[in-house]
Length: 184
Image (cartoon, rainbow, N blue to C red):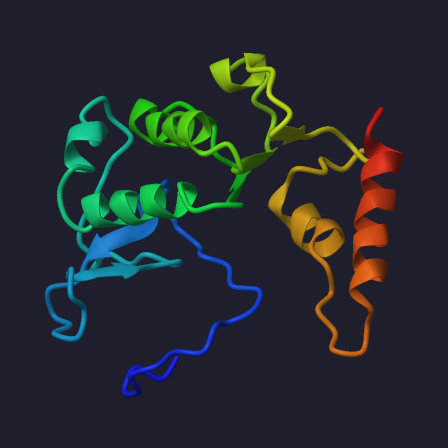
């Protein structure tokens, strides 16, 4: 978006991606003056990279109350209370109470919010909630591939965005794939 103008045009098909879980590949970056929180994400860590920011320990909830996490949690919470919000959860185990509380609060206060869980959470409290707004998708396709794994989500569930393709055909492909694998 052009931030130099006074009036913004709405952007269609906007997706907000919040990586509030999985900071294991975030490292401190004190050398880069261009980053506000002095953080960078690394995919191939080297010995020169500083320590991970939040280790998976019992104290990580307290650590997540500082910057930049508190700002991300606040923005995440704000987006979930907007009308007609849909939260897609991929690969999250629902083991962090501070994240769960934000999701549960949004479900309790926003009657138009939907939650789509692409992960096997059958042993978690979220799986016991009977709510028509919560969709739980996991299992295997006909070839034995886990349909809730990231590569299958990208390759089979996300539509191939093509300007010449009708939206209804993408939806029909998703519904067909979902129905074929519903009882597997």
